[in-house]
Length: 304
Image (cartoon, rainbow, N blue to C red):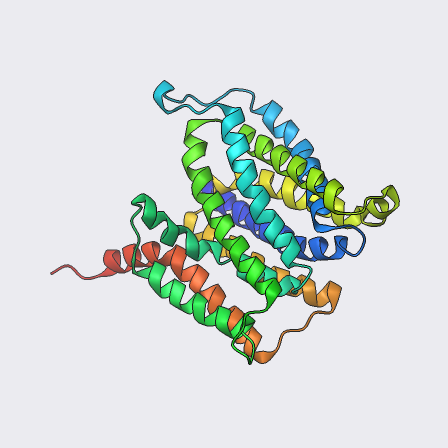
């Protein structure tokens, strides 16, 4: 029992580290664009991240058993997931040129609320928590992003559309992962996203090795830490973590983005925006934790 509790604590601490890495990743993404364009930055960081995943792929050389009727070729699955990832990452990165790391972190986090709503189109069941969470998150988004003229800021709009694609990406991975090797799928999708981003950057953006060297620290953080280490830790640790703990801890990515923006970029949020962030975080947590809360309430209810 003591050993199991110790493993749970270790898993929780590592998931907290993942949330911290991903939250500060928004700061690195914004800082990197002081020197290079959004497509070039994404291209290099995802290719670098795919290299970081190679040891995990080689270590897990065996492909999990999949029924032949359900199998999907790895190349096809990786190409499909990589294209959706490219669209989501592009909208996020381009949007960061026009908004803060804090806003980007919280708006991107809305994918948690959007996943079950979009899933209804594929006959996935939803619950009251989804709609309560969506209402809270929508109110928070209004306070955070809608200005006095009742218009959403351009950068925030790009992040919101990006959150929609992140939600589609999550649903797509949940469908593809049982049909192929999840770790190999991650590697291929990162390669596809990296190549698409870099080719687009070479066409649309000026490129110089000096600029890449100047952006080396943000690129290394985005590739090695956010993509490589963050994903690896999540895959290894989340299987041992309590689902409710994982939901809460990974939702802290958004507050960490705000903290990193304040500490490293000097970004400040107004009181209205902070209330909006709080509502959005509450909506994310309610959307994820409602089933667990319902089960706990049922379990503690007195028998008739």
